[in-house]
Image 1 (cartoon, rainbow, N blue to C red):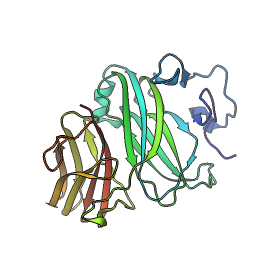
Image 2 (tube, helix red, strand yellow; image 1 turned 30 degrees about the horizontal axis):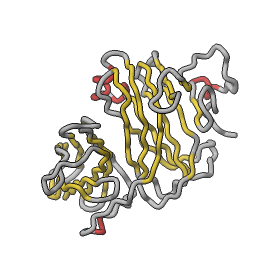
Image 3 (cartoon, rainbow, N blue to C red; image 1 turned 45 degrees about the vertical axis):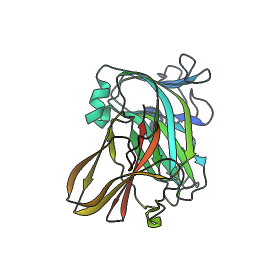
Image 4 (cartoon, rainbow, N blue to C red; image 1 turned 120 degrees about the vertical axis):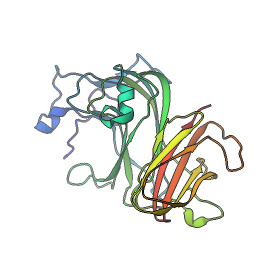
Length: 287
């Protein structure tokens, strides 16, 4: 009761699918309504089926939502991931690099478990757009690590197209798992327990051999930028100095502080401004 999404149309249990007319008071799925998303056996990363999402119009967004899922919230970031194959309209991936309305990705929503007056109980959320290597790609894993708000006891995940996206994608092997708490042994005060996360922009991501990490500073600040593995071990220090306000770009070449190359995998980049505001971004290195 109170749920403003359409539950369980053409998708497996545990997921539901939004379509524009539902908010207009239609309570039944019309038999002639276009089916834009659903389970298919045409492609699969593993098993026998995947989620197919097809969008030809630029009139609305397209999302498939997971149900809210309980988790133990101790402040540890969660790593959200899925494998995706793309067949976009030509030029879509290039446009998405500069205009997010052409993008695709995740929306992670945090819930307090009450379901609230709106049937959702939302206490926060984050959009994460994928950096897609081309209009047509083979199966590629996309991942983002996000820290939950303190009041969250549930999360939900959306596979999402923004309004200008056009094309077909296949999604498989969704996974959510806990990361290790991030801490620096020699400086325990750096433990990641921020009240706010402002995501960095990383391009390309996945990357090889170099990733560009860009961020903005509203005022002069002492900036520390660190790279961790998923076990919470510090891999590299990219910045530790005062910096002027404005836009900044840092490159990382997948090397540790002692000059050793890192293995393929997912890494977390943390930025602190004057030891207060923190940002967290997951990046994937593929050899």
